[in-house]
Image (cartoon, rainbow, N blue to C red):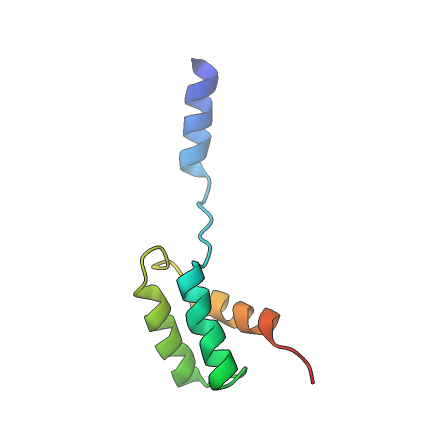
Length: 76
């Protein structure tokens, strides 16, 4: 019983990891495919707003958006 309580306590102290949903990834992929792999600041803010509007993506940040584009760019 004490071990379970300890795990519950640790679970509440640890930061939950928020992953981008498939729908959120689709928004970013479509933008990259049809617009640009290097969005402007204004485009980033619009993309961030669109992704945050999705259920489960409310915690998505500008840093995560920048990282997503950095990882998904392909060099010519």
